[in-house]
Length: 192
Image (tube, rainbow, N blue to C red; front, side):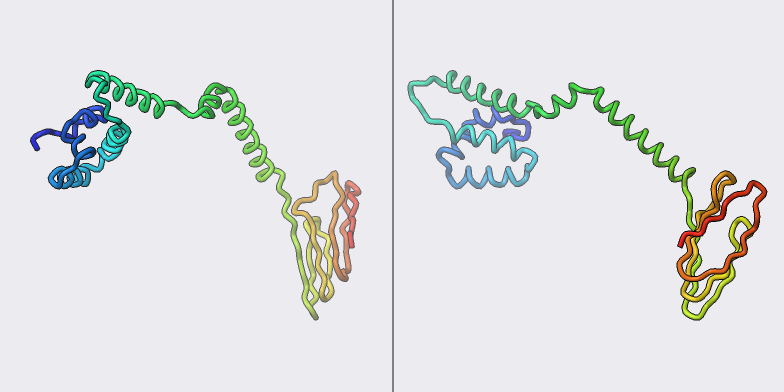
């Protein structure tokens, strides 16, 4: 065939007599040609399928003129194209509320900033010292006080003691304390 079918639209295929013959009254030559053409032009598969669906739905009515039939086919094609171009309802609703995205992005940004601040500036790391069976350990605390931990014991305190707050430690097991006096009379609390 000398026709360049690669430029055909759905309507062009539906109006092509050789294409219609392949679908309505195929012979071996038409079958071989169209199967080979579809394989070698996969980008046109959807266009050919749409035209094939249109033609297979046709009922030949001798009372209908060729122009009326063509107008009907063209109308079906336009309806199908219009149906494919309709956007989803949900997308329309989301696009019609652009301020929602602005507020949501602002809120997420604010949460990230708060989280970063807490992670960097409000962080208090606890220090834990543990002794095992038959082990004793002498530990110097941040304020200069010392504690001797007996076997199977542990002591824990927060990383930084502020001058206006009590110095607080948590002891599990046995420990002997030598507490240094602070000039601001800061309390020393041992939780057990």
